[in-house]
Image: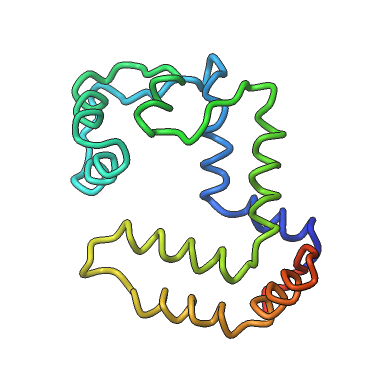
Length: 160
């Protein structure tokens, strides 16, 4: 798969779209977390928020419904990084290119594992994630990664 197709695949992923939407936190219109004052949150969404930022920050976010500036969102762990709006595209492209340099099967297995961790234990499909992980070690990409390392060159992953 060429780099353009891999980049298209990365940007088609909803998690990367989320990155693109959450990165420009210094932008005046996008730089604040807003919780509607009358919003009722489901247990699942509150649990996810508590898991992300901890109970103290979750309580403040939900109880006050105040707007949080970029630096505070970063401090509480709500965003991974803060970038100026002018640098957003370059930053997103850099992250996406970093993802595309990795083995696609490994990225897919990691995404699946991260999603499963977010589910309640009784709903997790751990066997599927384990099978995906094992498939990575049996893949041509794994062998290519070993060859590339031994030859001191970047790997050319194909997703097989």
